[in-house]
Image 1 (cartoon, each protein chain N blue to C red):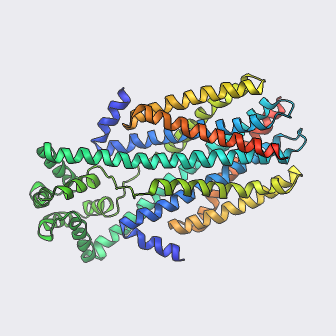
Image 2 (image 1 turned 120 degrees about the horizontal axis):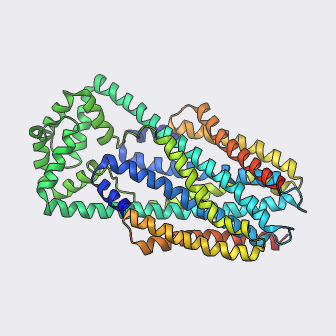
Image 3 (image 1 turned 135 degrees about the vertical axis):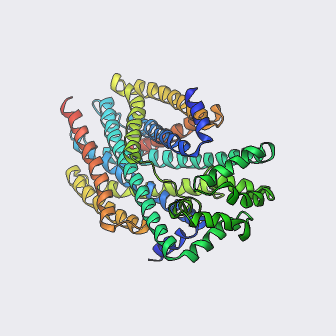
Length: 245
Length: 245
């Protein structure tokens, strides 16, 4: 409840809005992939590797390898993408800073062009332009946001984003894998994994819907659907490969 | 070269900019995850499942199950996320449309607040405000972009994004898996997979860097690093599990 209030509150305050919604996006991305992919892989293998001495052990090995690979790939990938965003923002800002000084006529034309899109004529836009020209820092900030649509990435965001995604992926992946760790009867482990993972997907999808303001049941059904289809496809594909070999 | 020119050109035209950079982002996301995770999973399993009759076959089964699961999870996830963005944009727009009519004073205050952030005083902002008030559609569009920082998602983007991500994932995943399909000697297949995947990661990272305007070599090294670390971690983890069982 306090989280929802926080988000509704944040929605009316852009600066805050972006930070909390980005953190939530990271958790959502990590958790949903962590729940879905290891679940589907484990289900796929469980249906295929029946001729091995200890199939549950094999599924756990593959599942943990997937969680290690997936969390690192997503976390590191997220880290470098965020760093890239920061670098892109800074190089664009340097370019704007130069343009404001070296090509003032072009920048004027761009300001008029921005306002024209909203039916604001030159005469009405001129006082804003003069005010910006008196304050070069604000001028550059204005162009970054209103010409290029770029937000300054929060400092430290890259590392925070990477760890949030990676740990959410591990937390998500632990759920479908636990039954294979606990039960050596692979058929039983598969059924338990399917049940608890679909429940977890429904709960997590519902929470996500509640946070993002979309209908709770619809969001729960959507995440269950993604996980279910991915797992069914992996299961059938793995069975087909083994039937033909 | 034409792609790069296209992107540089696009950077100065926001509307276009978002479409092409989003498609590139989808390909980058799908390809990099598709190259990295199946590669790391296959390497992890190859190092662990030495006591099985046909280990290459098992690695291919697990790898294909992972590609099926990963491409569906990412594609469907991307589809629903894009649809969510569109719904979010439309619900925010309806809210703004109401606010412009029902709470004109609050909207005025918000406009002044936006301009104040850039050192533009009320007197200079008033002509813009009056102009927007004369044109409610433009007023709402202005608030969507400048108060909330929201861009209208391109129509049809959700489906395009989903298929782009899914097929990029499959294309990426086919590269590290091919050697296990071709060679039944698991140690040899692993070495070939490592070599061709690292080469593919370097080429793809370089292209990505060139497209996004960051240094080619740095970008190539980064993607090789992510794939290499993820694969090494999966390999070591899977070996540890099997050594202790």
